[in-house]
Image: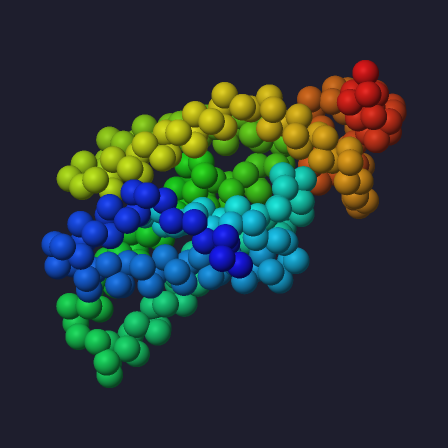
Length: 245
């Protein structure tokens, strides 16, 4: 349990600078929103019986490393990805009541501004934000998995470029966020082949039953949520030949 949480060194630097600048109220509200957001993810990971390996605390959020894989249920991944945003939405009535009895208007307005910004940020279809995972869940339900990954990469690049032009570089956090998103998007693109092969290997090693059958001619066109017949051969046989060649 003691190794579950990892704090990135930059988090300490940002925390110290915020406290020295006297923005404790901002930090407290911002941290509360992020904690509630992550609790949404953690709750549904536990509901769907996934293991959480570790949680890395970053200056602008956190990364939850779990044993969920690309070949796991699309519905599960969709719910887990959207749960953080849903929990954030649930904060609105809570803070409204708190504003009536406990917190002042200044703190309430800070909450409104930060919660809106974090909601919009997380819904951006940029790797590895929740918006990209939600988008991939829809793409892989329509297209073959390899094409869904490619489309996600393209959309992520365009949205990241737009985000860079729109963001105001007035704080260290802004540079950290852009650097982090650039690194993650670049990693996904450069490792596209390995990520796809990992998906195929997981599919081969962890056989699942699917209600629908898809007839395809190439292993690259394999669909995630269907049992694929490849050149009139069962996918398990084709994948076995692919990995044992």
